[in-house]
Length: 149
Image (cartoon, rainbow, N blue to C red; front, side, top):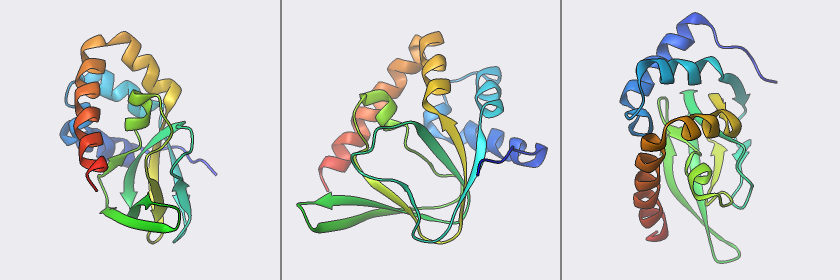
């Protein structure tokens, strides 16, 4: 069940967004507007956040806990690509490529994430073409890295 973000969490997200590569191209007011649209979700260990092949509807910022990123290799083989922890932002690549998720993300332990909906993110991209170009470049670099695994 979605929860509202309190003042302390809002400030934490604001500090993280200043450092997250994805958001370095935004103004203070643009970052704040995004945070105001976010909400909090909780996952238990081994709960999927999303699965490879899913259509993207949100991106996530880890507040507490850890998540595993898993990539399918052939039909039955799965490879853990990385572990994400507090301050990690993920899931936005699919917004930029307009394609299904390229990996599965599963809670490694109890996980609390702040969620940003695709519709909110898309409104920002429409208002800020320079930001969209920056993210497309970043997304292309990440795709090359993922495809090499």
